[in-house]
Length: 167
Image (spheres, rainbow, N blue to C red):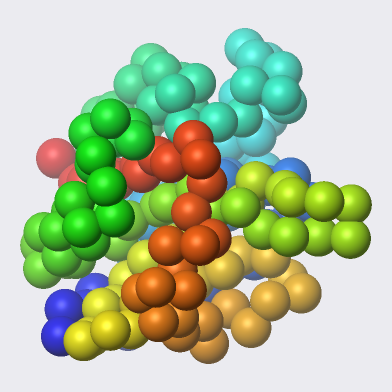
């Protein structure tokens, strides 16, 4: 079993429908003892980008340039090419979580309107189970356990991960 210290994970839910990335970033930064509320993140991000730019590549670019963020934290973005396959992704989850680093990951979430992109934070792996925090207020928050073979079905075709670390 590999797990992050769940006593430090506060689990804030997203403040708007498309705010799963800002909520996940707020949760991970607070996990590491920092403070970057999702409203502040979103306000700053939207001064430089459009809402349609809210994806891992632009988020990393934004965080790398944000003085308040990069003074204390670093952000690592990996793409599908880095992970190569699901086994590579699982190995990356194990590596990060064993270093007390929750992993933000992109998923496909089926909705009534079709498939939507969504982001969750993986914080626990044991045997064949993966657990993650879902910031959607309609979700169960921490009560998300999936078998690995079910989790792989949720992964976005634009698979990417984001890991935030304290400097």
